Image (cartoon, rainbow, N blue to C red; front, side, top):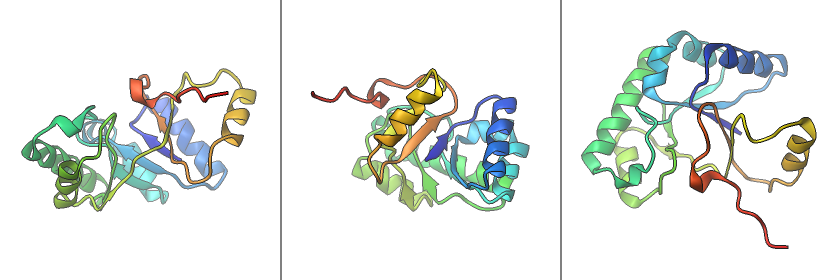
Length: 166
C-alpha cells in the first residue's frame, strides 16, 4: 500500500497518527509542489521512518507524452525539493495515469529515480461507503498487488477497477 499525493493538513495528520498508533510504515509519493506547501508534514513522515518517493513535481497525468527534457526537468525539480526537506534524495518515483515507456524509465533513472512503482489498484476517499465494503474489497485483492491511495482528487479513467466477467 502506498499513499499518492497529499490531502489537507488535518487528514494528513490523522493518517500519520493512525500509522503511528498501529506501528505501521508506509510509502508516500509526494509531488514536489505539495511538499513545498507542507514541508513540516513531509519532514515528520520521514523522521518517523516512512519512505518518501517522488510523485513528480506537478503531479501531472500522461507524462509518457512529455519530451525527455521535460521529464528530466520535472523529475529533478521534485527530487531537489524533497531532498531539501528530508536531506535525502528520493530514489522511488510514481506517475499519475502514465504509461511507463522506455523513454520515461530512462529519464527517471538519469534523474536519480532508480525504482519506478506502478500501482495495480487505486483508491480514494470516495471508494467505499462503509467498513464492510472495505473488508470485502481487501479480502479479494490478489497478493502482490500495489494499492495506491490517492490523497486528493478523483480517480482517472484508467484507475478504476474493471468489472470482472461472471
